[in-house]
Image (cartoon, rainbow, N blue to C red; front, side, top):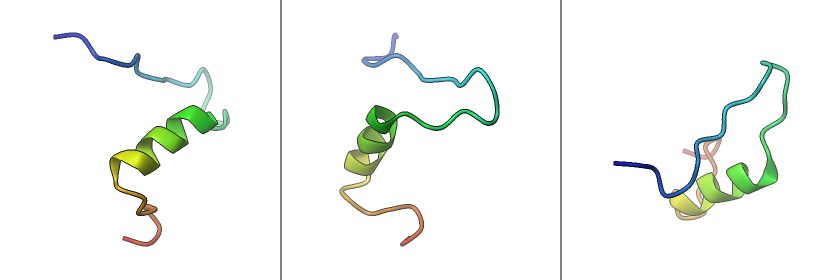
Length: 37
């Protein structure tokens, strides 16, 4: 089974997470930030 959206993997450990990935994660957890859990 393939993924609906391609998995994002950074080229280096220092690379920032793209806004599109952060937004998708935020929406998947119904607007609850990981730091509030």
